[in-house]
Image 1: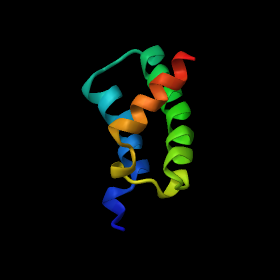
Image 2: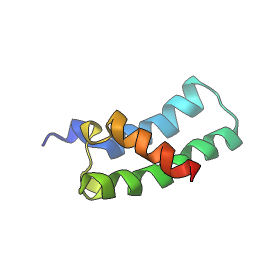
Image 3: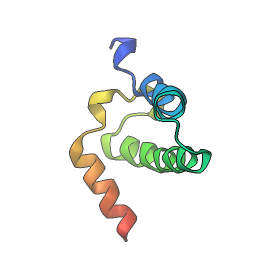
Length: 74
């Protein structure tokens, strides 16, 4: 598995570079994104059967995201 496919660095870049530098979002909005990802990652890890630190971009499928959103509505 290539390191470029690991999910962690992509999420870190999204939170630190995209939301802050490129989008210039408020701290509250940034915190909401962070908190949602904090809930999503363990859920996706359990669904996919892979530890969070070994998850890849491909592991975060549309089906898992839909299941996560359904889970939040309950």
